Amino acid sequence: MESSIAGSFENGVVLITGSTGFLGKMLTEKLLRCCPVNTIAILVRGKKGLSASQRVEDIYKQTLFDRLRSEKPDFTESIRIIDGHLEESSMGLSSSDREWLIENVNFVFHCAATIKFNEPLELASKINIQGTENVMKLASQMKNLKGFVHVSTAYSHCPRSVIKEEFYNVPITAKELKNVFFDEESCLKVMEDWPNTYTFTKAITENMILTNGNHLPISIFRPSIIGCTKSEPEPGWLENMNGPTGLVTGVMVGFLRTVPNIGSNITDIIPADYTVNALISVMWDTVNRHKQSNGVPLEEPKIYNYVSCVESPLTWGRYIREMHDQYYVAPPLQSMWYGFYIFYTNLMVGSILRFFLHRIPGAFMDLMLILCGKSPKMLRMYKKTENMIDLLYDFSTKQWTFDNSNSRELWSLLSKDDREMFRFSLDDFDWKSYIKSYYYGIRRHVLHEDLSNVEKATSKNRQYDIMIVIMVALVVYGTNYFCRATFLLDAYI
Ligand SMILES: NC(=O)c1ccc[n+]([C@@H]2O[C@H](COP(=O)([O-])OP(=O)(O)OC[C@H]3O[C@@H](n4cnc5c(N)ncnc54)[C@H](OP(=O)(O)O)[C@@H]3O)[C@@H](O)[C@H]2O)c1
Image 1 (tube, rainbow, N blue to C red):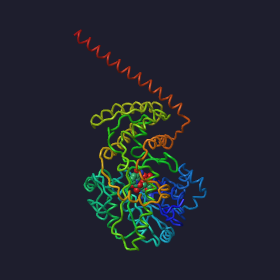
Image 2 (cartoon, protein in one colour; image 1 turned 135 degrees about the horizontal axis):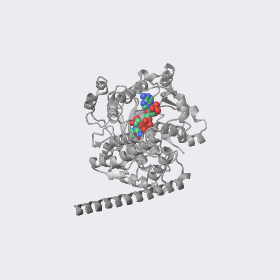
Image 3 (cartoon, helix red, strand yellow; image 1 turned 135 degrees about the vertical axis):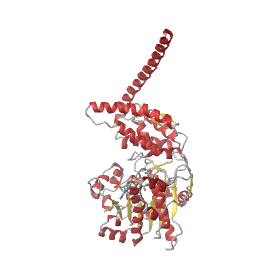
Image 4 (cartoon, rainbow, N blue to C red; image 1 turned 45 degrees about the vertical axis):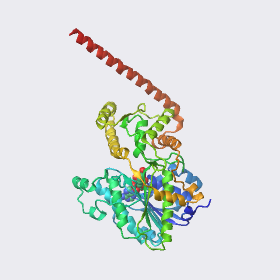
């Protein structure tokens, strides 16, 4: 197969930041499997008592790399670990690593970021804004740099309702933000209409890229919500509980029993493998555009919105309903209760439902844990999960109109072979089979259950079903009994 995108990486040296994260891992896998790169340098920080190399060793044992391992057993020889922290001055790089990067790197994919919505503004600014500035500074010294792609998010300008592939004004510049005193009041004031520090710092970073005088061959890639893979390296691969995945997992295991009614709203999920393909294609386009400009700096970095709502919109209702269809076929064995949910539209009603369906059973289970000599955890887990749902609420209830012309134009430039190898168009996307893979992906990779336990899990679920019928019958009988007793008492008095 002749692929000009893969060919553009021939013998190239690629630097990936965030390579231990969800997107970065998938990007590393795809580049190593499908592109003739010479070396992939990955920026990794030591964490939780493990050094950068110890962490990397564990990562490449994961199932995500099974296919690569069988196709290229010696793939780790093409990986060079660079120990560093984004936000530190000089990124905490050793001088030999720094020199090597400056001499050798041709392509930079900057994926690293803190994606916690509620990260304190000071830390989010250090990692997302200062960290990007540090990577760009390093890139500006690279002697053979051909392209740089910064990964932002489609929601960086979420206070707007129409989001084009454009730079927008921000309330404060990256430079000004450095002088802000990060107490709670100033943070709220400075963030203006942004609902969280994640999207806010991503917006400021985009502005910093626009105004930074480094004249790098740079583009900005803005994906929406990255879901599991569609097909590569296997269908349904995922590893985190972010966003819609967390919500569905909570319902699947019978933990969440009430969720906001957002059924007719769009959930802008994009498959992880398609996202990686789009990201690699953006790098190819960036390199070509800068090559064609013969070294004359282009006016503005190009922005690519990568979303599904334009070509193949998916509603929350369909997503949850079709997940539930699979639940009846293969419920998880570790479920703590029958997987059902009651929608609420009114927040007050939501609080009441949470009290009865989460807090009371949670308190009861905590009591059981204490009686068994274990530490209570259920109420704490409910508090954390409900906070997450509240943080997501903005994203679930608000609807945006996205323009993705640049991404669609990019797709039109791909050759037939490239379209096969780097498929990312979401025209007529088959959500039905994707949601099915998503369900089994959560079951396998998040809940760590394989299909051998389906019979046992279905039988356990039937028992829950019978218990619910008995409980409902008792409640109806009890209410009836109470009403009759009150009536008789009234008549007697
Ligand atoms: N996931 C989504 O749905 C989504 C949607 C839109 C955009 N994005 C963007 O895609 C990119 C990757 O997201 P993701 O989902 O892969 O996130 P992730 O799984 O949380 O990965 C984040 C990566 O950044 C690294 N990192 C964070 N702080 C760092 C620091 N101070 N120094 C060095 N490395 C640091 C993390 O390293 P450690 O392993 O050491 O923590 C990890 O490798 C982000 O820029 C995000 O904004 C993601």
